[in-house]
Length: 219
Image 1 (cartoon, rainbow, N blue to C red):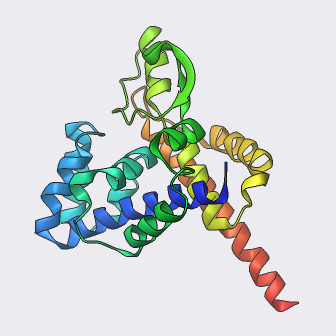
Image 2: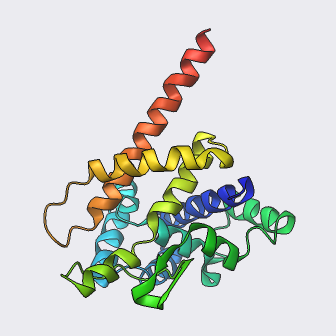
Image 3: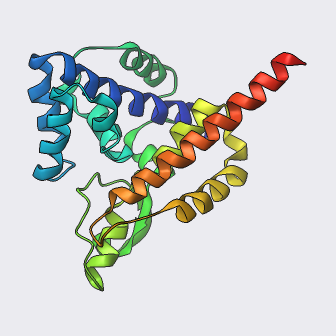
C-alpha cells in the first residue's frame, strides 16, 4: 500500500460524506445521491438514512452508511457532477499524478478481501455488494464476504491520523483487535454493530493523536 493509495481512499470516503451532506441541504442532490446509495444498501436502510438527512440529522445518517458504500458512491459516475467539492478536485489531481497506483483493479486488490464463496477465488477484491442477511452456515460466510468496510475505514483513518503507509502492518492488527472487542450487537441482524465498533476505534485513534499533538505543542 502506498501513500497515494491511502489518500485516494480517504478522499473517496470524504467525498461520500460530502455527497450525503449535499443531499441533506439540496433537494436536487437528494434524489441522485439516495438512488446511488440504494445500490449498496437495502431499501429499508436507505429510507432510514433519507429520513435522517431530511430531519437535519447528518451525523445520524452518515453513521448508518458503511465505509464501502461511501467509497462506492464517490466512484459512481452518475454523481460526478453533483455538488463538486474539494475532495473531488483533489481526486482528479491524484488520478492524473498516480494513475497506475489508484486504478480500480489496483485499489480493489490492495483494500479488498478474499471471497471464496462469492467468487470461488482467494484473490482480494471489492464487489460493493449490499450486506447479506446474517443467517447460519453458508449464508453467514456470504455475510462475512460481503462486508468490505474494514480495510477502507482503516485506510481513511491512517491518512487522517498521519500513519505512514509502511507502518500499517503495525497499526491495523491493533485497530482490528480493538474493533472486535468493541462489537456489541443487539440481535443477529445487527450488522451495523461492526460499523459502530469501527467508528469507536476511529474516535479513540483521533483522541490519542490529539492528545499527542497537544503534548508536543506544549513542549
